[in-house]
Length: 70
Length: 221
Image (tube, helix red, strand yellow):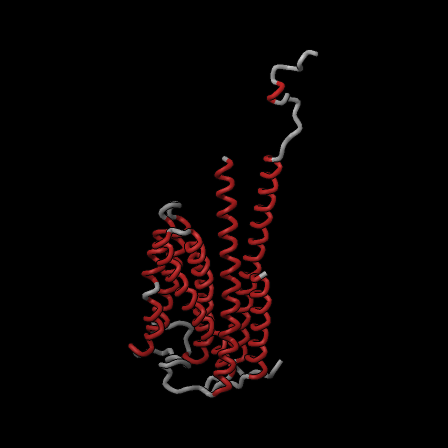
């Protein structure tokens, strides 16, 4: 660290406030973005699951009248 | 990918600028080490002006096209610009105290900057609290009107007698500073501009992702 004069404390204060505010704001935005991405990914994953064909006991439409007798 | 590159390069450039401020720059005559605040106070003011110019452009584009991406860009840039303006006011007060003997003065430059801060706070409040179909439209109008204050802030030290010194650099500068000051100012300006681009990119992505998520949820309901 260089030697600072009697005004050095003002320089350090102004620089410190800038670093803390920009750092905290940057981290806050980054974590919000990760959260939004996670939510969107899990939501679209749920939608895909909902849209996927399910195992069912229903008969196919072609056999709606029941099994044909031999 | 672009977001990560902007974030990493912005952080590296800011680190280089910080090194320059503390280890390369010389104290400014008559102001001692407090004068080094110039190297981040001035670039942050320029980046705030850039941010509000982006809000202005995005607001016009939104009113013409009604494409919500312009609204997202305007909102993101206004928020980041407001953060930078806050820092300009705080670092200016810290710089002003040892040089002027006061934290604050109702000087034209400081007062018009404070008005600018309130105008973009109003933009964000309108955008957040007005109902959805009208909110983006009203905010876009505020974004266009508020930009009128930016040239007033810049020119205030030429139009009126102020405590605040006139521009240190640029076409209106009364005396060009030494090349070492210009060099470090340019590095710092580049660093803050890249970091601004990173913050706006992240903020816009949040808006886009949440809008897509909201539309999906709405469609499902």
